[in-house]
Length: 331
Ligand code: NAD
Image (tube, rainbow, N blue to C red; front, side, top):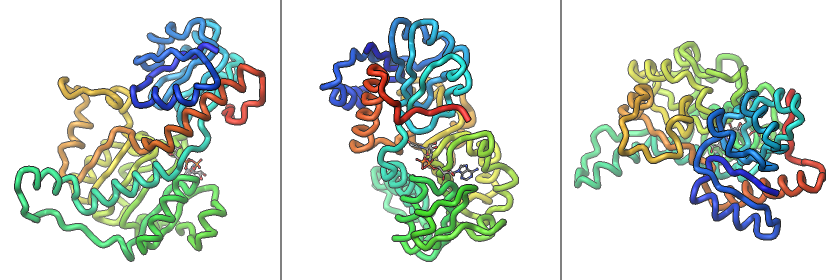
């Protein structure tokens, strides 16, 4: 099948080519992301393959359908960037990668937590400049501290397990309690408990209308003073303006994010020679107690292998009219 791969990166192509070795799909790698201006690139391709910041809204899906595309294959888990109702109306199938190494994302969340707590980013810069002073680098022991895991699904559970290993008191928040979480002997937070007790809050829930800006001025004001916030999930879980105010007042002790609400205009590109017009990300990066990584939490060899193998298998299943085990539907 002819497949237009939007937002393709050099490091991913190797894994996609490997997964496609026996499937023999004709893959066309495109640097551009999918949107209303670029959707014409998919005309005549049976499948379009997209990533987290491609925009598959109703207009884009209509253009895909009229160009002869029947399958939209997401090389990611989250599908908040696809209008699933429009896809169903148009008879366009949508598949995603339901699961791929939750360890990759959970371990990156831990890396961010350790770095922001122990100021590894600042120490790294200092010692490269032969500055071995320790002023301002004091962190806290994670052992014995309370860590709130918001979203106790696959990634949240792995993160919770690692935090247990550090000797933390782990509490969960999830409208749909998970047996795996409770089987670790963990419990869900009482109302108000996260704000009262959590020294660390780590976000692992999907972006939905219910979770949009789940961290806002009100939740931040109710948080424990000096708490650390980690977000490896989706940028719009956080009201970034409110977080900046909380960092300025010291209410929030530190922020480490792998995702950002306006990341579609920035991430996955080298903008080091450009003036960035986004004042919010510039303000965030200017704080000493903020670490930003560019949506790399998933970026391990194991995760890339599974993502690419699952995506190619879904395309093959679609081509052969086989059941789409990774199909995602509206509702
Ligand atoms: P999952 O579906 O296994 O778990 C998500 C959990 O969130 C579920 O238990 C669900 O009940 C819970 N949830 C739903 N609504 C909630 C709410 N209002 N409050 C709290 N919890 C709520 O998903 P997963 O595989 O663990 O992935 C979690 C998220 O991680 C994805 O949705 C995606 O946004 C993000 N992600 C990021 C990267 C990255 O590279 N940064 C990679 C993969 C996934």
